[in-house]
Length: 415
Length: 108
Image (cartoon, rainbow over all chains, first blue to last red):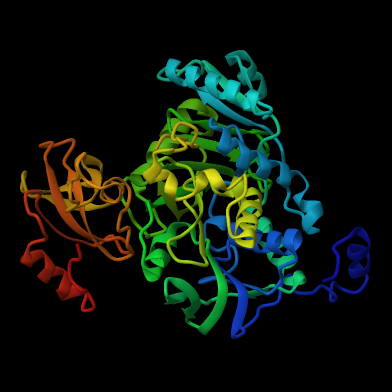
């Protein structure tokens, strides 16, 4: 792999940019691998990357049904934050945010991490109280957040309307080192580095069956033939239940469509991320100038990658009330992704009833921010054959054992 | 936007009038059941890609519960039936089979 650097840009500029290589090599599957990661989104690629980087494992294939970064990694609103309530969540999300800080340098790929600050508005007394509690939990666990008063909110985001009428801004939780990153670049950067480590990235390869021998995984049947493996990890977000079905077990998750949309591009008007949980909407501005807007998830299970129309209206209506200045903007694009919701809104990083089969799923509406940390923790679990400190609270057992990690109040929007 | 028939009001309802209650025909467990059964009842869902049977409530209407068959991939709705049924009625299964030849029937 050729390094991206100032001198490489300089050299290429003088030879009509003919010397650039493909970022990653597209491969056909070999007969056998040590480890197969099913799912070539951010989490899957990060898992493969940290297996190679932290544990020197390179006999790995990442197989992807569609194309790299075509799932939820390329469909989210790119927000990165770690202002969660529970200790175990803070552990993994803060690890992740911390890794994002230097990810561009680590991957030699500009993921455009922009710690522009994340502001979570409090628009009811209850929310204000809950956020205060979160800010204390954050402080105890070393996450840099603080409560800010309505006047400071207005200073940070001049375009905001803090006076209501329905939902006046009573305060906000401010995480100055939260922000955004270029979502596609995260997937591409990981894919490029994985390819450089010698990991096979196999696109358009769908798993259609799981071969087991005495409850131990031996091979995967795919649309590109059978591939043997000692260990397999499913990292398929919204489609995890479909894969689990093939392997013969059920998961405590339900898949729903979550939507986002962007406005037409305009000049810079907001330089941080604002989340308004009570009214169900969040907003930031991309480098292209589009306002990136996310809203609520559908109220019923589906795999349609489209979403209900009325949710767009609800989201936009709420945001127009909070940001009257955006009322004349037109919508440019809208899309949906299939998110995997758990009962407690926390992820699952766990062993499964099938020996040698691991799973990473349940990130629900907020998986993008967790990509590096999740990959780190999953790689550790696969290599050691048991979850480490970061992953162990997130095992599937927690549901039957009653030790839920309740983050439903910390989710981006109320679900 | 989904358009689902409410068998109690006997008319088609807009998605915004309704609220989804998740998988239908769950076996309700009580305190005497095993941990495994109770876990299944509380958390494990079919969550399949294809035909599902689910509960809906006509919240902004009669307020009653009923069951619906729907495809989670295309959102095609195959009809509604009473929440008193312990399994999907034959007429609904026949409707599904007419448009999905590979439909294998209802699995508990």
